[in-house]
Image (cartoon, rainbow, N blue to C red; front, top):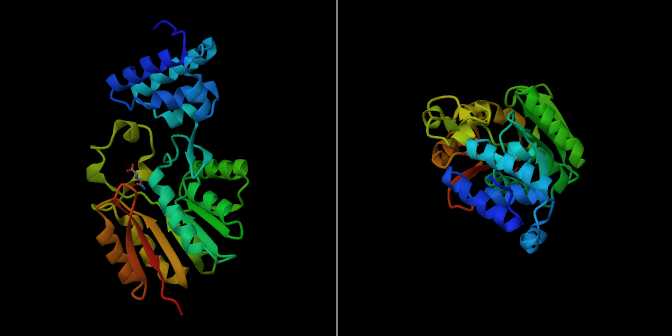
Length: 287
Ligand code: GLN
């Protein structure tokens, strides 16, 4: 491929090349904006400008690799979440916009509640814990993950973004059990995709993101929720909140299993911006 003269020519080529290879054409904008080091506004204004050689070299290489199936976030090394840049690798789930809605729901519940204790279970790159800590600075935030490699990335993100979060290695709520206290908020985006759906996933996801962060054990994918429901009565405060991301067909089942664990709780299924059932919020009984 001969180097195009101008920014817009490179974009035109890359968008149609990516589309032909089954990728989102918009990925071309994200990649080129990154390599030019511009804001979105400047990126649109500077379309007719000449394309520097070095930018083209990096951009061209990334377009080819993305066409082959490498996620853009792995090429760039980051993804934006709640307006901040988080480092990611193939050891953690790439942040999804739906999870911003889970965080927004928790922040809304936390309004007016100062010095609350929050635990983010299966934190991955740390997006939920770190965003909560930064958006609501009086919180005491703890995060757990079974993967040490994920925790290293989460700790790096917390350091880069200046968030104070205590990280613990362990399976789901297990690290909390040793702390002999109850929590105001327990929040989690656990692995929930049923194994039977694994094959149907986009190769971009299947081949580049950790199976352990995506696939829920048990036939229905709900093992993580079952395990957390078992421990919630001893770990969640009487007037606390437990909030979970779920798969779009899991709302009723997840609601039912938390309702039997917390019979007094007010449990609601919430939809994401695409109208899909995506979250379950359990407000424990107020005293
Ligand atoms: N929403 C993610 C996906 O569909 C799954 C996240 C998860 O399993 N927690 O790829």
